[in-house]
Image (cartoon, rainbow, N blue to C red; front, top):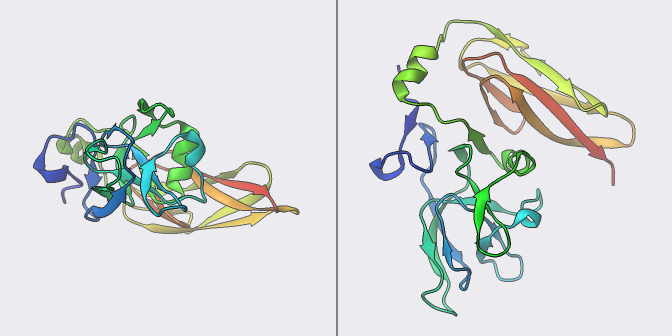
Length: 216
């Protein structure tokens, strides 16, 4: 079976785990004066300076450019010079290891509400498997599973096709109710990958939910 996961720089997956279609990290400039920022921290790009800074809860919103820090960076070395850091702009990460700043340079796991916003920017949080072998053991790539689409009561959603085997790409469509517009998709249960309106089936039958918001 094709290797599903790899570790960054061949280290043990102690904080970040990326699948085999994961892009290489890119370099960004991080705002000075934010202390030591741990790997896995969510950063956002500040419109006033174009520098990246640790994201507090209020900064994890759909309108901000959000990334995940690949390796720890120390921003105390200079009070005026921006530090270079490597970040991931998308991919799959271990639940509990993607971090939000509490506003006082203390970091803790992002909430489910944060995860939904991050998912909208193709930053996915997933449970950590014990090993690659466990993934291979649990997989049955020939099984056909159904895709269930639910909604939040302010519109409807559909999937085409509505079933498939491992690797099948499903197009999701959302129709908002009057005075509402589509907001985002959420994977509620099952195993799948979500990129925009495309769902890729993995091992377990997925349920996805269409979320809507009031029109501006």
